[in-house]
Image 1 (cartoon, rainbow, N blue to C red):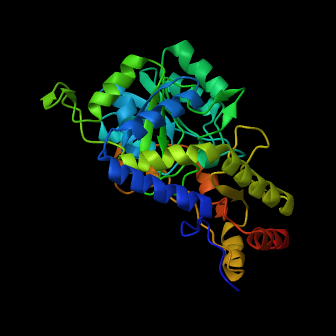
Image 2: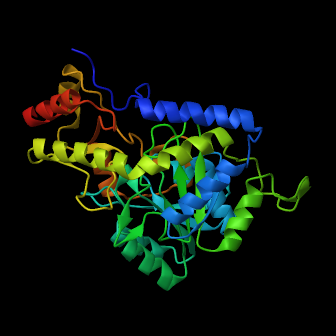
Image 3: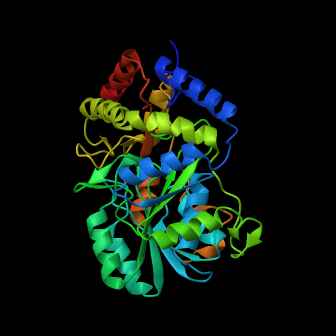
Length: 365
């Protein structure tokens, strides 16, 4: 019996493979390898997807987070609130620019930022300048309430949409709620290229102009550095061309992911459940089960050769390199979830046999 992977990047849809091959050949023959027509086209298409936000393509999702904060004017020593259970990407970006991360707890059922916890931290730290709301596993945080809270207090809002492109809440896309939003096109993402890639979107075109300069050494014109925070973060044309070809399939692939998670939901019995929603604010980036029996369930999945993992096994304030930045952090829901989550296989090219096998194991738990 073969193993079922969490994801398998070696599988190709024949049409997608042909498109990607054509994209690579076309770019190679064009002579445009950076900031060419495909990058411009991708930025325009992403802007349409995001209700006309101004988009700047960059080197990767981590750079996107850093550039979003810099472009919004966050300075060293200023405070930025975020969650601790999302892999450390937001916290790492905050620390990289010399800002101070303030950690917020999450909801037990959704694993997303807790509005109640955010409100408490904003009262405790009235000098918080910005909030990074991560849409984890492809499920959106409660953006209506988070937007209301930040707007009233004049706090900047950044959405980390690396796992939620194509989702929407109350008819507004993930990435169109905040002052800025960030995206990753890493190969495992719902919209993926064949290497690293990312994008930042802004409500204010001036912030987008700042970001574009920062992402190319801080140049105001060629070889003239006007911003010392600039560095090199560009999406190459081959990746942009691939993303343009794949963005047409985003909605279809998101629906396949949703349908796989829906099968798992039906297979599970209480007290186990999936992090999901039947509405448009879930795009199934990861299929995450919450269970009171994490270790024994992992053993059963391994015995059945069902790939699994934990996203993410270490909370930000427990990372050994970062403990010095956090004192007396109390995040009870985050602490409970890290001991309860298991990621299951979920990707558009899973076979029916694989999905059925996973469901059979889930039914037996």
